[in-house]
Length: 521
Image (cartoon, rainbow, N blue to C red):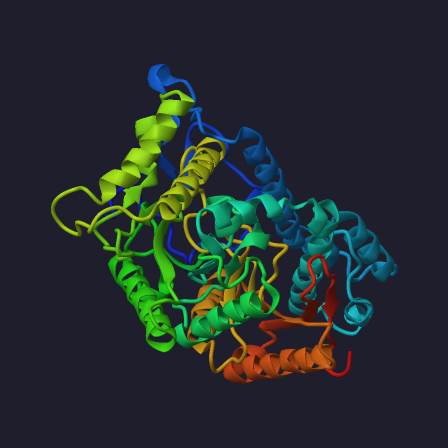
């Protein structure tokens, strides 16, 4: 597999071990660097060649949704800016801790600058000893998470999300359900909303270093049972399929160090494992429920430096190869100077060519029409994202490595679909999700612990209010997972370097996030 598709020259970025956490290394901690020349971890990088048209003019791809790009940029700047502001505000508050009206001053600053008040008991104890900045930082991250989730829900209520049109599109492609398993890596946290541009309500996304085949078979059964019992989204005799996607990733700037941590930055290994699990999942369904219970599978790669995708196009039998794919960054370059109709035609031609080329991985004919339409839509949507990165960061993100703010444990927050905001470990028990959690803790030891900051862990599960006792059982699961985390990483916990928050949320769209206390609540 050719992984050398980087848009600029090679750089040797600062290692994650020495890179400061977000907000500590840049003035004010806000998004930086939307100019022609950009910097990656302190090293100057030439502009991405894909970012200029002939004559040196800035790129404007004919298929770009510029209005959506502006909306997404505002959303990203707002959310990341608020999280980045935590450290400067706490530094300011720390300098006031011996003032006679410290508590009042601190709360006024926090309310004005962060949007919420700080824990009163932590502030009140500052006169006895130095202010517990670790506890204050951890609590601030958890409160900012809940505050921003409320803001996102208020500005984008469920009824305003156009999911019906998207569901209709997927049904037209022949799919009643789309289930995506990306890596836990925080650089893929914006996969659905940014990279693929799919409304969150139309797909399920469960992150992990590698998806569990048995758990995915269980989700398939639940989806099909709903079709039989409730006819949602279509009845069982509609002839549609279930689509399972796996997303792996690499870094074109530094593939040997900034790729998938769970696979030692070996992109070939990550892609092979993803393809292997997809085959096992498909085989498990067919073995258990006969060949009539068909599923489609799709493997997608992401360059987390540019957000460009590589789609491994299935053949007529649904089989995929690591050597048969459409590289969307190359397609962007080939179409950036075309008119809209020509560019769209070239997208479909690229999909067709993927299975007609000779040599390694040649497929047995083209995929069915629905799969072609879906792949074309993903590619076209991603062209907007490539231009989003081009127009705002010169073609490559300045934070090519890990730069997450917290670890999301459990079922995640649907309100946040944002690159490098959270490392996500989808689990029901710590024992089950230990490999993902261990990778996340290792990452945050470099990002936070090396600077004396605790690791924020947001334990979050969803309950079904229609089921008696569901909330109470879910709250208890939060407490068990929190206790297991503190036991597994006992030394960090004893040093005050773990900051665990617990929340639950009803499964109904738009439900508020509810805080769970360590005992009761």
